[in-house]
Length: 247
Image (cartoon, rainbow, N blue to C red):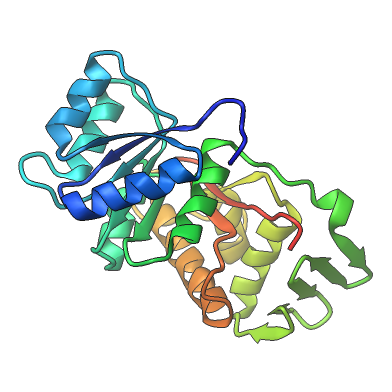
């Protein structure tokens, strides 16, 4: 990010003044252009007045208009700027609601700054790595950076550490990894679980919660072997993408 010809514009919305000012300073030092607001109403006024952003960092719990209401108002007005929720609410139900509502990501406030910076780079700059140049596949084994996929025994490892994936989780993870940099739809992922065109849930998108559950399990297991694993990204309304750069 440092040295980029055009700074990525960040709108930061959080009622915690100490956290907001500290994060704004850290992001500015990394070369981001940060505009911060202490509440949702002020942020919405910014966009109504013609202000813009490349990414919005949004707290959930705020006086007056909460973060979810801010995002919904933006989407209703046609503003599709990517939203990353930064919140202490780490229960699954909040993450599910945020992602279903169109958020690009949901990050615990307590996670370290490098994690957020990585997400910002991938989301704001649309990084699309090219595994063809560095990934290596030989027979039934795929190597992609620290990741090794063994298709002969349906096992995965990260930096030499085995990942305790079920067969279905392995197949989902392998699909994402083999299509690094591409968006893989909810439907494609779900078809791995139950077979092509299987009808599930309620409505024509009822299978999505099931897919999100599988992805959360996979992320959790990867973070058990590497707490900084952040390569599986949500693409709101579409599905998921595996991003990787040479590591």
